[in-house]
Every structure is written in C-alpha cells, then in structure tokens.
Image (cartoon, rainbow, N blue to C red; front, side, top):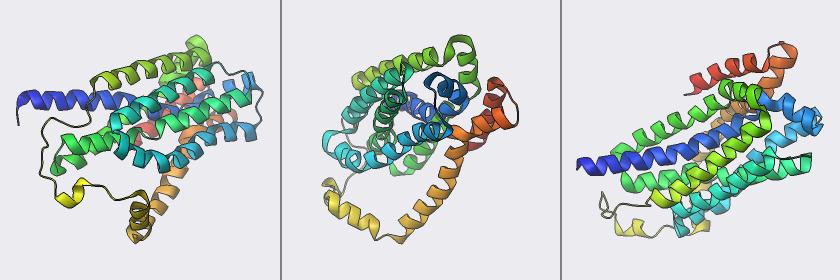
Length: 269
C-alpha cells in the first residue's frame, strides 16, 4: 500500500477522532460542574438529573433516523450537519440562564453527537480493509476516550480559572472549528475501492428490512442487554452522579473530584 495513501488515511482518522473526543467530553462533562450549574440555574437534584439524562434519551432516539441518513446522504455531510447542531447546542448551553435554555442546548448536543461514531465507522469501512477495521475502530474509541479525560480533572481546572460558562463556550467554538475541518478535508471513500464488493452488497437493504434482520438476531439482544447494564451504570457515575457524590458526601473539592473521576476514564480506555 503506497506510503502517501497511508498518510492520507491517518490524517482522515485523526480528523474524525477530534470530533469524537468532543462527543465523549459532552457525555461526562456535567459531573464536575454539577454544583456550579445547579447554583447558577437554581436546579433541584431532580432537574439536574433530567438535564444530564436528556442528552442520552435524544442521542438514542436520533440513532433511528440518522443511521439510514448516513447511507443515503453520506457520512461526511451527516457529521458536518450534526456538528453544526452540536456547536449551536454548546453555545446555547454555555449561555443558558434557565433550565429550559440549558435543556434545549443539551437536546441539540444529543442530536448532534448521535451520528459521529457510526458515520466514522462507515468512512473507515471504505478506507480500511476488513482485517484492519477492528483495529482502527478500537483505536477510535480509545482515542475518543481522551474526551472522558478532558471532562474530568482538566475541565475542573478550567472551571476554576475561567468559570463553567467560558469553559463550555471555548469547547463550543472548538467544536465549530473541527466541524469545518471535517467538511473541508474528510472524504467518504477513496478514489478506488480497497476490496471487491459483492453485487448483493452494493445496494443496502431497506430500513424496515434492516430493522427486521436486527430484531430477529438473538445475539444482538444479548449484546444490547450487556451494553445497557454496563454502559448505563458507567455513565450514571462518570457522566453525572460521581461528581456530586465525591464533592458533597466525601467532601472533595471540584478539582479533587475531577482527578478521582479521571482515573475511571483511564480504566475505561
């Protein structure tokens, strides 16, 4: 494989990894700023939980239309459009003066981040062989977890220096810059396919047919149940309640809680 082609693939990978890092950041970043957000927006614990959870509910529902849209429109355009929604959501959340405005921002972030991983995997399927695909997707998730790290101790330090609003505003601006970079630099597929595709694979199945195939697969439901229990518990702690527990019950500072949560992120990687 030509050296220049490998370089192009790595540039493509790291460009997509940048936006996926931000996806992970938004998933967990509320934990270390929960006290600040609750104070400024006058939130009860129930309202704080709703603010954290709405991103994931919207994220889950958005998977249903966005999956087929990736096949029809192309992953680069879907990621770029969703990146704009994430940028708008981040800006709105950083300037929110009420629970309603903050919820609206989190809804936009949830929709905007929903397609990034699946669209990236679609691009990788065109740029990497089947033997390389598992390695590159595993690396993508590992690198994306740097966003988990950024949402812990580094975010706590940034909030201590400039406040949570300025910190999230900076992330929103970074999100916009990375979105533009993806729109300009990422290609859905190389000029020549890496592998010969069987004729029956050239046309993807219809949306209803695809859902039917998945719904009849018992292995899918087993893996879904494992992911529900495992990842749901992980995000309940890492994404929100670990921060209040460590600060309010254990008595750690914001920075101390961020450092403790950072080690969970290290373990996850």
